[in-house]
Amino acid sequence: MPKGYWIARVDVTDLERYKAYIAANAQPLKKYEARFLVRSGRFENPEGSSRSRNVVIEFPSYQAALDCYHSPEYQAAIKLRQAVSTGDFVIIEGYDGPQAS
Picture 1 (tube, rainbow, N blue to C red):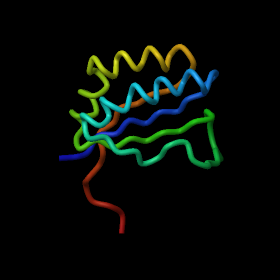
Picture 2: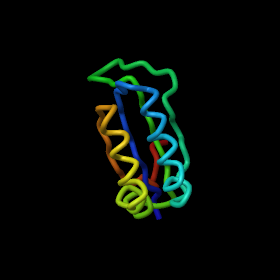
Picture 3: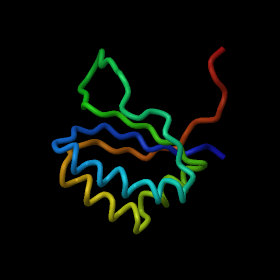
Picture 4: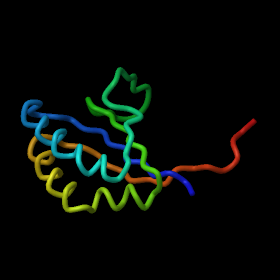
């Protein structure tokens, strides 16, 4: 079964208040067995637009990624994030088919 992923690109307007969102999302992410693959490290943006913060979170399945996002706990956390940031958020199913040789 393919894994699920959240891909988020965010511009934060108030980092101190954004920390409340980070604290609030910890419980639902743990509950749905999420794992950060990318969490706002260095980056280059050679094409297209960018935002200041990039995050990729892996879930054991696409359904787990959806369930976490729609959980009451994460929906409460979203309100904290939306008040102090602007972003793009995608939930996507991973690919586990053949790779190019």
